[in-house]
Length: 172
Image (cartoon, rainbow, N blue to C red; front, side):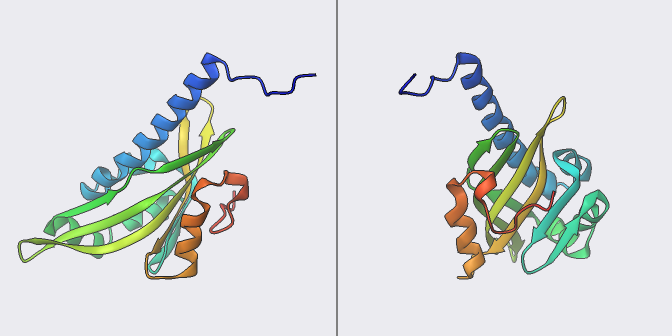
């Protein structure tokens, strides 16, 4: 009987690092894609059964509804003025083929020659690994950092594995 758990193999450790890097890259690519209206790049990162729960705005389910996010007059006007969807590095927790990534997100636009903050959010990405495809976004939940309990709960759950997350749990 072993009293200590077996140390991960080099292959397991490498896989973990690769998973973290792939998820970080996927999230980091979102802002430039959104600010350039590169809808194809955005949809490649999101599973076709995805959900984008944009607190205070709308809930978008599936690729066709996701496409609408980036073709609205609101979004197009932000891009025409100059916009930046920027986020902090994400805290990633991987549990098998599922992961959560939590970070702060910001949306800036240019007004009168200055950049102004439009939104400051707590953001959680729920991801799943698909064999041969890699990691895909299943759901993203954003909540304004307006003192709401739901925004604070997203931040409180940042270190929990996907199976223990309660706010905005993916429906898949």
